[in-house]
Image (cartoon, rainbow, N blue to C red):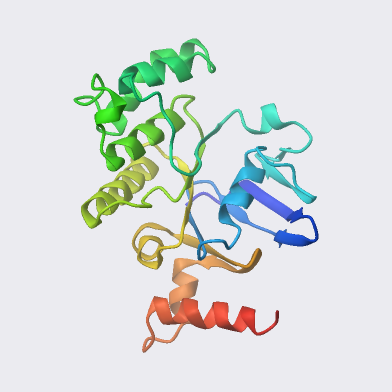
Length: 247
């Protein structure tokens, strides 16, 4: 594991009217991490991710990717970032390959030359020339990950990539992320509300609850901190109940 800090948030906050959706979040993602951004639905995961990508402006704080400010220089900060936020959207009447060709126009020649490569990376070459409207949800998720890889990013941010999938589909996407991280040396931030996904896939976890990052640690540290006689699920519930008691 490399100790280089590739992404950090500094007191990242977002306020809608008089209520904070995200408040003073300080995340630290190192090169090579599969970072599980864990929290229940409505905890602030997607809002945080949209600020990391510059889709939403922060009310306070900032995001730094390779020490470049998203607020100050979004294009430079995000040039080596790939992302899939919420359910990926595609042109339904175009093939998977044609969808990637359309998106690659935004990135230039290098991305165009990578289409076959990224389809192979996500094991979608056989389905590449089928129309997306015939794709299963799992195939759409894989195509979304392929799209996130077009610009050959250093860090890939995936928002609930297994959401709505059956157990086979979840296992397939989880194994794909682990393979991509190990084989292609990519850093991942994976948001999820599923505890077992983090437990089986990630080396580091940040737990967010009601907009507050209440815990950030390696999975090894987490296993050492929680007692052997309680499950990860019970430990997570105890953390969020403790956070709720301070509201």
